[in-house]
Amino acid sequence: MRIASIAAYTADLEYTGKAYAFAGGRSHQVFTSTVVVLTADTGLEGYGEVCPCGPNYMPAFAEGIPACLSLLAPAVIGEDPRQISAIHERMNQALTGQAVAKAAIDIACWDLLGKATGLPVYTLLGGLQTPSMPLHRIVPLAEPAEMQASLRQFRSEGFRHIQIKLGHDVDEDIELVRTLSKLKQPDELWIGDINAAWRRDQALRFSRAVEGVDLYLEQPCRQYEECLSVRQRVRHPVKLDESLNSLGDLQRALRDDAIDAIALKVSKFGGLTPSRVIRDVCVDAGIPMTIEDAWGSGIATAAYAHLAASTPARALLNTTDLHNYNTTQLATGAPEVSGGRMTLSDRPGLGVVPDFKMLALHDVYE
Image (cartoon, helix red, strand yellow):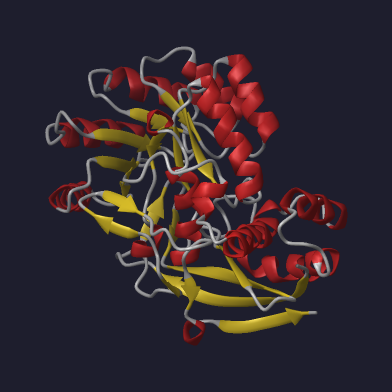
């Protein structure tokens, strides 16, 4: 089997809510997704999707991904897509960095591998270990009354894991969490996601002011060293996201005892191949993970869901259903959601098929 061609498609995904807002004045309503179709000389197709959460969240720019693909495609066309580590070597030789663009090709290769073997990707990633995955839902930054309404709605839909976006003035966030905590149920897991908005003194003041509230602090400060300083001085468990971008970053955090949990975003690390390594290191180290991605529709959700489903339940903090955050869908066959949990089919590969009526062809590389 050889890669005969690569096609790149784009589509806009509109958020279902009023605005997806988080710290630093960042707010987005529409996200540009890139879908890659790898066609093998056997006629099989593999699908991958990546979608940055706007241009100012992670080191990725949606409009730049097709340009990266134009450099990556010639390096992998003619190669065997089942030899996924070798594909990564070819991509790294062709282009330095740009993990998100590489992730689109990597995910499509895993989809092809699954179809070629007749197995779901979760089997290839280690086997089905968490068939029913707990989901978190995000409460976007808004006025307190709106955030309370979102929390009540998600609870009524069966969600027991809640990620609360913080990033108002610190005193306002303290009051917000104190107010919301009156609604907290004993079986709920809460994460206060600061998205790197605070100085360390602000993070310390917040944590000490709400010390009695059971929640994780996610990425309280921009720099890793700041987060480490906070981790060493607060009682709340600290979860890192933006400051972990490679296996080396994770190894450093483990050596420094800087983390209690991580957000493993598959595209940020370059796809399922490097993310599987990150996952396995965390499992061995006893670090629970939110396995997800920055944004996306059904293909992106399926990719990280297969990684999550092949993770031991003790190591999977939660995942999420990004395809249900959008007003439109780009694929059929996305994971099923019910009662705050998500399940996968046993179809070969990722189990999803793009809806090409929703996609605009950007380029074809042969």
